[in-house]
Image (tube, rainbow, N blue to C red; front, side, top):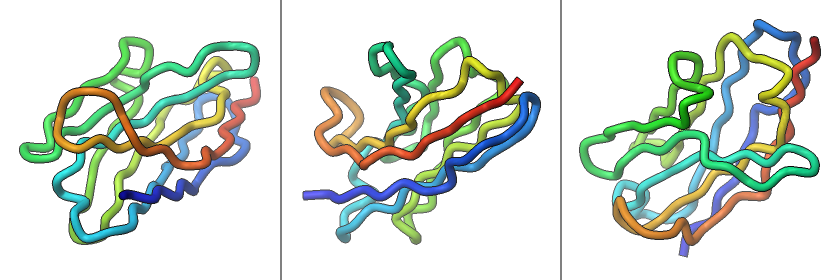
Length: 119
């Protein structure tokens, strides 16, 4: 069982940056693939970025490539999402998620943190 707690959301102007953090409970964080998702008002939740458990390979949705960076610190049980060059369309609730291994559904979710980008 993994519990996830996100932080770092807020209000930022277009072009600005934010760094989201997600800290996980438990001693087996390094065995989990991690991801960030987001859900804008009135829209379905979408995948944003993921990082593998072993080699820390990363992957992104096309709309954030080159602007967002996902990383993890296994010693701190934490995954990060560095978001640069933010756009109003990035406004959403951002969720951290975990899955055992690198494939399959994400089984564990945080409560979400709001990111609002003003134009």
